[in-house]
Image (tube, rainbow, N blue to C red; front, side, top):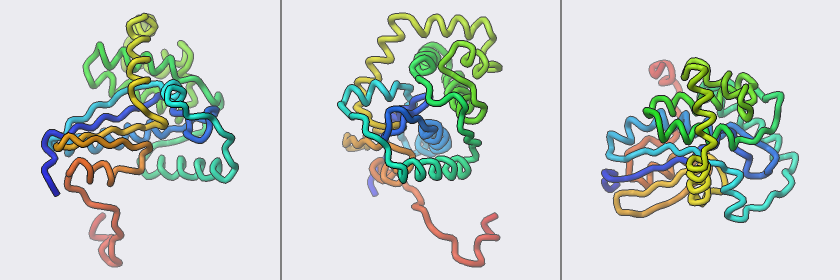
Length: 236
């Protein structure tokens, strides 16, 4: 395997990802992708790979590349429910179907974008999972100002949240969201774009392509493997 030094990884995340199969269904896959990249980032950085976590509006991105809506077969709906539940369990995330469903994620995406651009990284990296867990675990409607206030409680003072919401609707911030969204080339979320040390770029959709991402970035990794009988207790 070659050297990973100088590689770049961008991961585009929506606060409430529309399912690739249906414009009217949303899913927590961006939350899954965010959780994984936060876990992987320290060692990616150690191998010389930079990581950029970017909020974007997937609905607009899909429209921009001409990805038309088609009805979702029931078999795929059943699989998505199974996949969402099991992935959440594996990552230690409590996924609960929200009562208000679906919602439009544009407002929280604008807020996350503003926070990313105007606050320290740790504030953005607290804001995104607060939106995701707020909606997918607590059932908070993050598409409303009241829901945003509730989801971001403890991260910012109430008066500051109100100011952030106001500034997130500025023409400059709206344009930033549009530009990032339309330049992503994404048809799903999370959308991962990785450029290796040779300058070769590849893109992926989803939270289940990490082996390919690491391989492309020339980062040493351990593929999924089965522990031989008798060794599992030693691993605990």
